[in-house]
Image (spheres, helix red, strand yellow):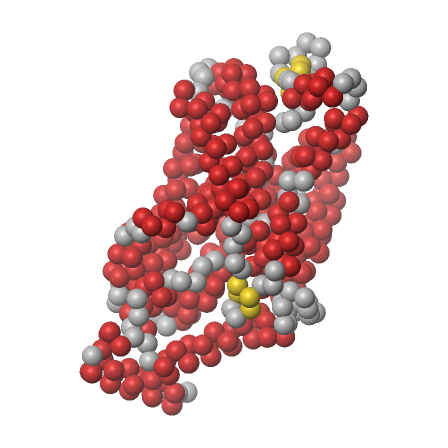
Length: 439
């Protein structure tokens, strides 16, 4: 169709600004207006956020998004309904394809003009940010969501390994690959952000001020749209996002499925397909609130309250249960029985002191300084803070609830019941394996 009149005017204005003093002038007013219009079209055509005034009135469900999510959950169901026999084969594609796309995007991003600006911004640390608790919470949430400790996913998949499998080597290898992948992904993101900063004639910090979904689906998507061969890179980029989402969903659901099958083997072992179908349906129905016109506001609320702080609290309870109630010595003896050697002093100190103190510091900091939540031009009202805390607490309320239940139903004085609840006991009359109610 040719270049639009607005595009020609912006190009002439930008060229004139460069001739007068150029790159220091920043993005032109018309350029900013056109960019806001493009972002507004995305919000109106895909998210349809303009049809919801806020969390108090979400509106109806978008049938287009509902069909897309139904298609995704259909893929998820037929990938995990037979267990690791099917999901293990699918993961060969969903786990390796993102690495190929990352390498392609890294090479393409490195050849874009201004990419070096993004790399410099990425590698130059701002030590003052270490004083912000938000940075620590985001960093911990990044590790928990990328590596998966605390979700039960690693426990579920590890339960399919042989008893004497070297889990120590697996843990070191997995953690190293996870950190290197995150480091590589940073180069992929910031080379493109440097390109965007070069196009807009602004600093990289201005382009990178948005975080989370806004950075991924608006800023990065806009950069891809302005690249040569944009269609190809857009297709592989969003395929990568879909693969990553499928991978995470496989793991999360498999953790729940394995736990339930181990708990009720007589009831569910022969009805796995029906149980998986029921679980997928429940997940789909639970996600409908995020598919409404105001679903973006719901997603943002979950992102702030139901992810990082809640997971950190769950992991804190797990660390206390294993290292203090079950006992580090007993846990190391179990590891020695499996691997033939015991963990060193460094790991024992981490489990007993460093990890609990660090996690407790993050939890207290979050409670003392709750985040100010904002999405687009919508500022979340104060009552959403209470709602967010309720959503976060729902992730681990079963732990203290069962503790209270056990104290009320056990026999003896309060002290006897408390000691009985936190003292490991043999799981059978001739068993060497011990369990504790806290675990």
